[in-house]
Image 1: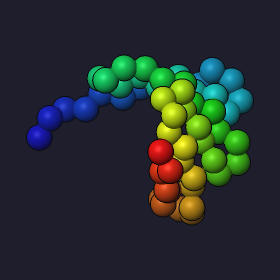
Image 2: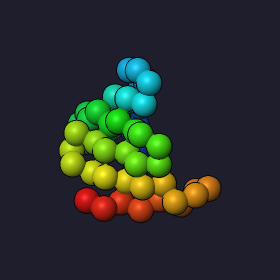
Image 3: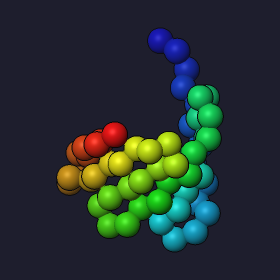
Image 4: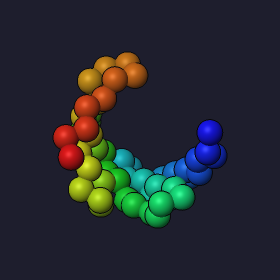
Length: 54
């Protein structure tokens, strides 16, 4: 099983800088919807559940 690397730094209200082994991205969250600079849209459905559109 490979080791995974992930760090997240808060840049402001609802904005985060995410750094992983594959690179870095910025994500912004507004309510249950999160949009990343890589084009991912994620909707939080409840406790522990989410749905990624792209």
